[in-house]
Image (cartoon, rainbow, N blue to C red; front, side, top):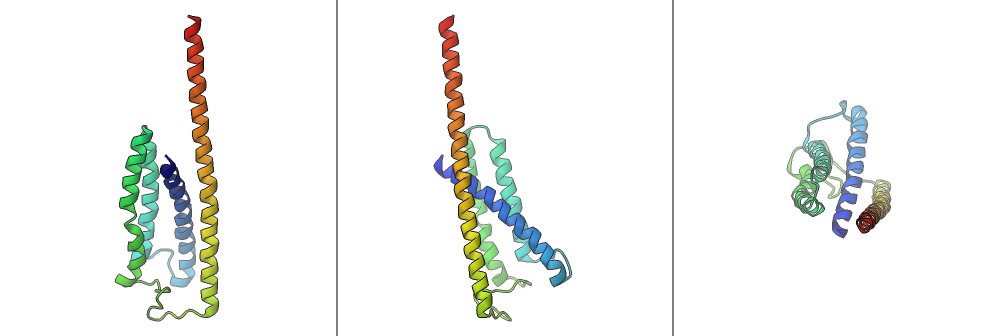
Length: 165
């Protein structure tokens, strides 16, 4: 259950982050590229990733058994992970309007100040993710503990009723 809680929590935070990226990216794209959305590979893969996160949540909510839910969600998560390297390599494999900033691709030269800003942003969002993940895992464990207590209380109540008969 420990890994299932971690995966669930991570997916929920990932959904929030990818939604923020798609929405703010679209808002940025309008003045930069003249359109809110272009169907270039990196953007399309991001939209697919967003839908994959949503489908993960739908899959989990459609299955009653905790064991089956964890098993199916694990398999789905492993298969869905394919989109992560695909997103990374999309700007290297296909013609795209996104620059290749990490390897200094054609036409992209980052000034030292831009590199510092990028690294600070990566550090800040990683810290934010880790903080949210820790809190979400704690919340899910508390919900599990509450469910166990409720089940135990129901069992004790049923036992008292049967003793009185």
